[in-house]
Amino acid sequence: MVNDAPKPMAANEVEIVSTRQAYTVDLSRLGKMDLLVTYKTASGEVALVTVPAETANESTIKAAIAAQRKAAGQWQGKRLAL
Image 1 (tube, rainbow, N blue to C red):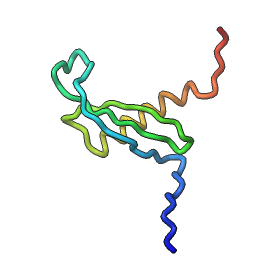
Image 2: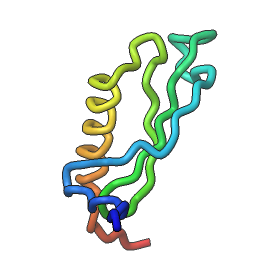
Image 3: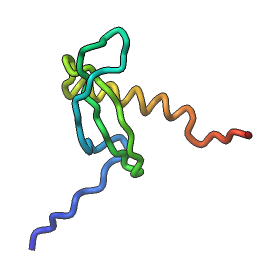
Image 4: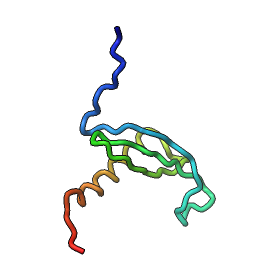
């Protein structure tokens, strides 16, 4: 019997869930396309990052996700009084 269960992700890995192209909302790039990349982290969090379609490749997607994860990390665990 073959074990086809997926291996658990390492903490520094993400899984690309889907990609879609859409017109950008960036005013400096009107009329151009973005690649919308939905990804899932090892903890199960699902997030979306956009990359200009004309420059989208594995390295630019990795860089965009890494930048977003770093920015999000500064807020994780903080409590805000309302």
